[in-house]
Image (tube, rainbow, N blue to C red; front, side):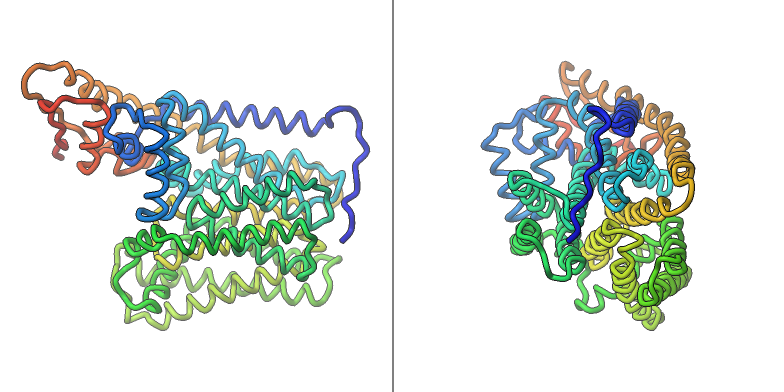
Length: 517
């Protein structure tokens, strides 16, 4: 492997470093502005009310017991235990932590994408695009913010693993291009790989296929440090797959149908919905594959792979669109026997596209860089459990969407620097990626304020007033918020009323009932 060149230092920090730091501060402040309107919702109350103590004052022993129960019975995830820790200090803490989590994830995405650029090439714009990735996806899929990011349970289950995956991709890419890394950092990275896998099943599949991608990129000739990381991923995946809680959760999600039928139907439903949500990213990927195929530096073999991948990706999108037209309802639980041929064709094209794009990016690493193929491997892995189960709600597509965006950004980061006046192209590219984020932010901050005031005045205030009431008291809890798309849509349904009763330490004479209408 070639050793990564060392840049000449021009002072303590390069100008790009200060630019990136400034962008990170602006990102934190922007997310903090939105999370000023944050409130507990749904499972947030449930996790805090489980120990039976008001305001979530649980003990360390309870936290450990809940972690064991999650792993062995509920869902096989560590993320819910992490959420309990974040909610334990009180409701003041998460609105400060969430912006840091989102900013850190954006920086990690930028770091991963920048690993493919030549040393000395502009990098601040890549970090700017990385910081704007999540908000850009929110603009693309408006409903994804409410229950995938703003809802604490959704953010910890999906945003945190995404950031951890991005760090793993960056570390892998750094070592693959011969970068230096001490053993203490390698061991810390191995622990991160294991924790990323344990967080939940989407990141587990992504981490496993990412490790396979690393082996393929290296041609099975890995350094000892890379073998440690790949081994950690393999072992963690095997341990996660042995979790009883994971399979209990899977049994609750999947339909009661033959395995082959479930996989075919689930893949058709979820993959077609993912493509309908990500069509600009998908078209951008196809365009970049085509550009790479005709690039002067691309060899004949790579051209064939890149062209084939572009055609396959286009065909996959076309067939997925045809499926969505013929089977438009996501609520359709039965296998569409009338369109069996279409479901089978869609599944075959899905497998072919994943393989061909991966092989094309692998063949084109000299132009597109290593991070692109690693990001694609993680994207493919993140879709395994999502597609197999047929789940198509917005939050489960957050990680695949952002990893697809990372694949596109990594390709852009590698291609832009090959053109003349790359700095100008970089600025224009970053601006094009950040404008949708700004548009989305302006529209979202107003709706969040409406929801926060509604919850404070119509739900929390009446509950707290009822605590001191004498005699039987009934409090009606509305479940329809002014902007349900900006929070968990089932935030205050009747199933959570008992947890509100425990959390707010209400006496027995107070009854919470759902508001009709």
